[in-house]
Length: 316
Image (cartoon, rainbow, N blue to C red):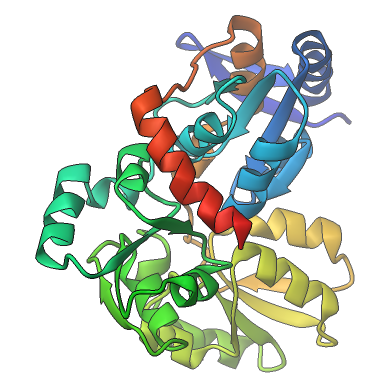
């Protein structure tokens, strides 16, 4: 029996064949010379239709280097903005235009300008989970996979780290620099608790606990290893253990199951779901390729300054 997906288009609910929509997407990709990028937290069906699946760093590199006239970004708004900044000559589509990142909205351009005025001798490192406006006011961007390296690359002794306080505090463990973390956070990772880690260990005593650096410091202390999503995927592939407790958004479990079928992975919390990452589905991907909308653009004056911060990171 073929898999079927329930979809809603223009307010009308219907059931549509997944393989049929996949075929439409493949044809439209050829017609438009398009590439599809999907974050590790996307729905499994969306990951299965993508040309590249990855974390923010991998997708940023793909957006900057892959051939194609159109980028369909299956993620959230700041990711599509980053792709538009790095590929100004390409059409960047965000199939779910209301897919936002609450953390990115926890800091504005004006707030960062004020922070810089109060600490004029500090460097500003901004996590990629920020708007293009904030990136344009920063010295260099970072991802969870390279935050420590980026902080240590700064010549200044003090670093304003925005917007994720948990990632900033994690990076502070591995540098002699003074880190001034902004009080932003990820709604998914910040909810994990040491009690959940303890409970998961009781249920799966042989499992290795892997958590994302966006988690709180006490959760990081309770884990066995800390890694970005790409790092978690690599650890599960390469470590000899057969069981793992995964402390990040549950969308990654789809890829873990496909890439490491001999390993068993348990979610640290079954409700660790980013609702914005789940707003994209195959129908929205197909419809975006049909209409070439919604298109994400960044004003040139902002994009030029944001691009410098992103390219400094990619140069590392």
